[in-house]
Amino acid sequence: MKKVTTKTLLEMKRNGEKITMLTAYDYTSALILDSAGVDVILVGDSLGMVMLGYDSTIPVTMEEMIHHTKAVVRARKRAMIIFDMPFLSYQTGKRDAILNAGRALKETGCDAVKIEGGVEQEETIRALVNAGIPVCGHIGLQPQSVNVYGGYVLRGKGEEREKLIEDAKAVEKAGAFAIVLEKIPSDLAKEITEMVSIPTIGIGAGKECDGQVLVFHDMIGMFDKFKPKFVKRYAEIGKEIRNAVETYVSEVKRGVFPDEEYSY
Ligand code: KIV
Ligand code: NA
Image (tube, rainbow, N blue to C red; front, side, top):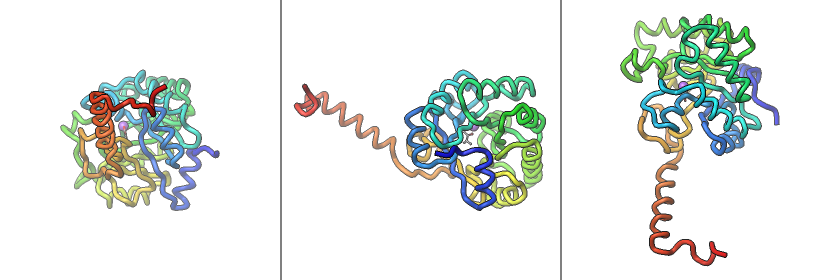
């Protein structure tokens, strides 16, 4: 099977073919996503909340990201795999960014990294790309800056609109192969998508983006600690699992399981 590359994504944008991205943090989920035809699997630092129970993405370490990404890479046949650079693995400068992102590529077998930030990260993105590391940008709501903004608020409204446009330009100019646009008005996402030559991947950024991304556990109804408006629930897997576990507990307690069918 032909693997999805940065070139594939660029061609998809040019052909008007939508790009699909979902998060995965483990082997079993990645197998399902890859075989279901998801173009890009993001090992998001959202794993801090979804897998590890942290309150934000801030505590996530390189070690945790590497551990989970290795499992995802083992499942992959077709999808591109992006490693989400955790807080403090790139904000301290180009050298740290190259060492950490290079480590991600070398140790996990992922294809690219993602870093949060626009104009502020232009030099770092350029340095990574020059070092041979493909970079996906991420502008708009930047969860690693939650403490600066005091919450997961909509970005790019009013005066901030121009800043977001400058961010998108900076990320493109620095050589990123795609940009995630998180929680910004749809008309701004449309403007950015038409302005840049690289694909835009939206999350809470409307339908005009070149592609869409969601957190897997959100869209299957497995995680409800946060419920942003932009999450569509395609299944209620959490409820299904709960029912299964409750039935199991009840059957074992009552001596119903295992019966002859499940015994030797
Ligand atoms: O960590 C993550 O899951 C992300 C996506 C929501 C874009 O960064
Ligand atoms: Na992230």
